[in-house]
Amino acid sequence: MTNILAGAALIASQIGAPLPVDAPAVIVPSAVAKAATGARAAMTSGSVTSSGYLSGSAYMQCSGSQNGSGWMNGSVNLTGNMTVNGPDGARGTVPVSGYVHLSGSCHNGSGYVNGSASVYGSGTLYARDGRRAGTVRLDGTVFVNQYSSGYTHINQYATLNGYFTAAPAN
Image 1 (cartoon, rainbow, N blue to C red):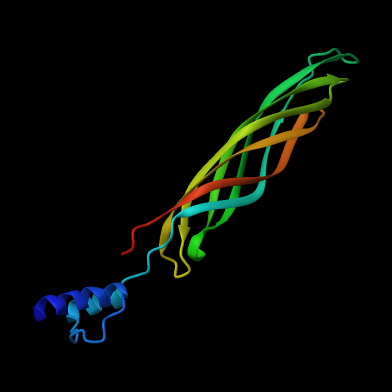
Image 2 (cartoon, one colour):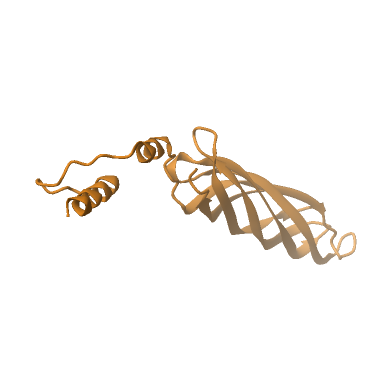
């Protein structure tokens, strides 16, 4: 019976459970003690948010005559690097990209265009000690509404949401 109580006390001490006053003395094997002190704490998986600028350029032409009205449309590849602060101090930079299809009316070769893009990206976050903490995936929708006079340059601020998946503890 004493061996059973000693085993229960050992398990209780490993998980931090309180021990009864009359519990037998617990002797922790050295292999267990070394594993507990040398193990790295597990990172926490969870939701993340990141904000930054996405940019891209393209030429768009008005379908109207030189002094007439018409329609313009085109696609722009948006790219950027988002700094992500993850759980437990994990940090990294994640490349993101997506295409925005812009369209709008024009007059004399220019006008306002608008559109939206689905933006995605994934990358690695690192712990404060430099070890790989896990991976993060970001996504979101970016809305663009701006003036275009043939050459369109976009520098759009965006906030993306995602999920951090912690790497297994070593």
